[in-house]
Length: 111
Image (cartoon, rainbow, N blue to C red; front, side, top):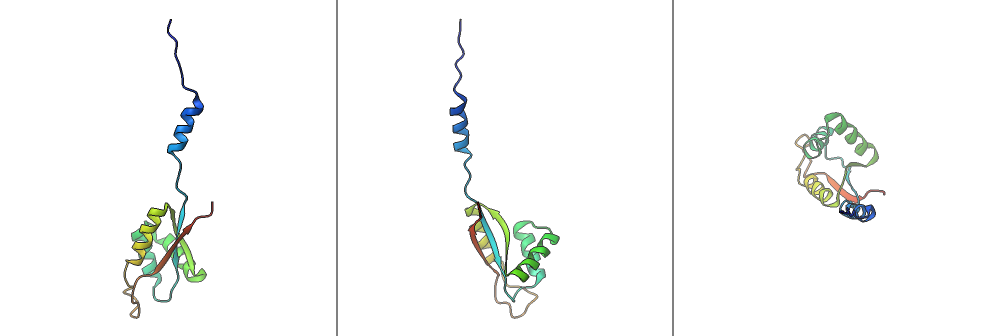
């Protein structure tokens, strides 16, 4: 006669939960300025984040009217990368006085 021994489900579940703990989310926040056009913002959001033009326009409007807009919520590591990409995107070719990229900050997303 053979016996089957099964591990208690709680220990298996605890191991799965330990493996799937997630990092806390961070927001990538685009900061408004007067040196970048809507076209630039829409294009940048499409290239860096894959946002469709309609979503890019809404975000461009939000940053223009509110001074800031969350463009992505992700892990801290990816948020830092996206912030760097925004800072490296370059000047707006549509505005002569534009000297560089837009600014962005990262901040913990509300839990």
